[in-house]
Length: 226
Image (cartoon, rainbow, N blue to C red; front, side):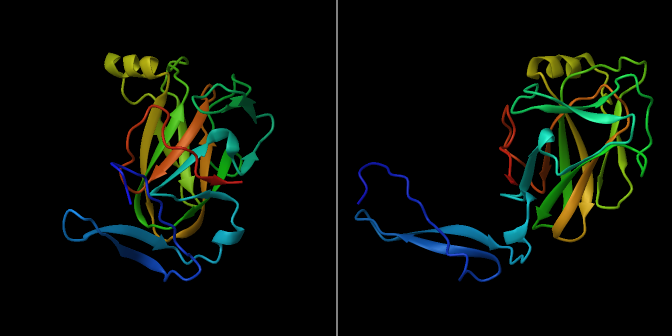
């Protein structure tokens, strides 16, 4: 019995739910007319790795990770990753020391941050990387690179758009969100690698999405299991 409005919770018994995606009918009976049927979409990934996985799990079509919550930091002396506490919108940031380092080429001798992720979908995935605002202070656009597993890293230009409108937005929002696209050929466990190319970049957050994520100032909440 509901007076005006009430939030109702529905739970899934995952131990008995069949694998795959299903539309489950939920019947609501009213005194004003016939029954109303709404559908709850559930997806049982049927992944034996899930219960033992430590990292970031796809939720509602996306994965959200704070840059400082990496699974592994790979330092190549004298280049090391440094935590900058509370510089981000929702957490801390990661940058490379020394800030006077030369441009690096992604590879076995290049510093990187690795994030263990568990994906349930395949196909085109968008990677939105959140950075503290900066300019191309060394006379060229600052770059970073992203790769999945052992794929060739994709080098991305942080300042691809030189318009005054873009800079105004970076300053107003106090963030640069840099998009890139990749193809995921199989579901399951993957490793996202964030590669240092230029110093002077401060990573705050990484969001992976198979579908459109509703826009918000802080971005989607972290989907990590740590």
